[in-house]
Length: 272
Figure 1 (cartoon, rainbow, N blue to C red):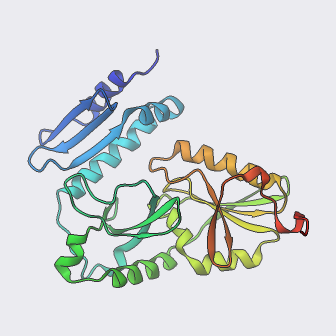
Figure 2: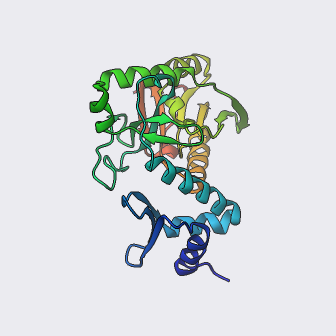
Figure 3: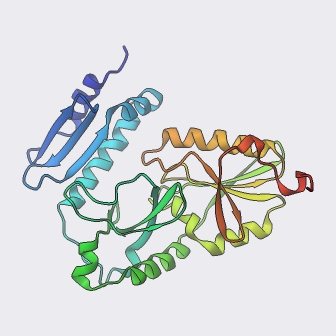
């Protein structure tokens, strides 16, 4: 039987029942919201996205969503300081369309990254993290420069565990520990420079969602098509999608690859 938004709404209501939470369904926007009754802070879920994941992965997708919502709501109801927790501050990559302020008006601290992505900052809380807003910085008189320095240092300390797959002469390296910062490895310039030096072709990078990063040593024209297909598949499956586009890493810059099929490695390009 086909899953509909109304049926998914009922399923989520059963899963996320709590005496201190309130749930609402917006039929026009096809969204489902869970929030604290007293503060109004909460999470809005786009039902078609949940249905798509449910149809491909079943109850496992709902289990993951339930855990994510419970942890996020728990964090919203707590107050956290930054001082003394410097080792728990990390950068997180989000889509450029990701909100720059919370639904209750708190401005999230962020930095520009690429046309497709933006960097936010998070305080790690173990099972989840809290995005850092401007009021948290002001409260402790932190500057954005200090926050970025601390977060960048911690990003470089994150372990990298890659699995290699070779397809049609192109090498693909996948990192996915699901620690919440897998995509953040794209900010580790030391790692990118090391990978660039080892590449036989060109280094391309994809961050389709929060919990995966793909590095590709593209050695022929097919490599871009394969990476595009991989990125699109991961983007569709991710809990926190970022971008289905990939990037070329050249001269310490990330260049979005828009037409992958027509982009060829340098060694195959003809001189003008």
